[in-house]
Length: 167
Image (cartoon, rainbow, N blue to C red; front, side, top):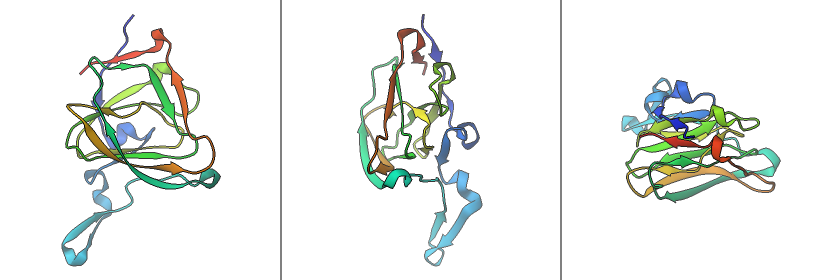
């Protein structure tokens, strides 16, 4: 049996149960001119939540390779002690696959198609798939938690719980 996920466009409203979409358009209400008017600051785009258990922010670059298509969703992960933000550098769209916090319910997995100008911030405990680059190797600026404690849970989906992404 094949279960198919059809990604929907990534919007702030649709993604709200999982965290924040990081993009200038969503933050227009908090646009602040700075640098004598030469720069527009789109302020406070994501809640970086990493302090639990002595954690602190960590800034990294993740380089992701596209998976063979059709993409099969075989596992999900979450970070129970901190949020995790991904901001794309590559100028390419990518996929975001998520499920609500709590016990993983494979029937509640959703997929979003993110555009090159959109980042995401997964809220603490939100289930997600690892980076799903499309169209070629893609770099992401990642802001997440480093510090003591176990901040990664992974669940491998049983064959009947897996999804295939339809692009």
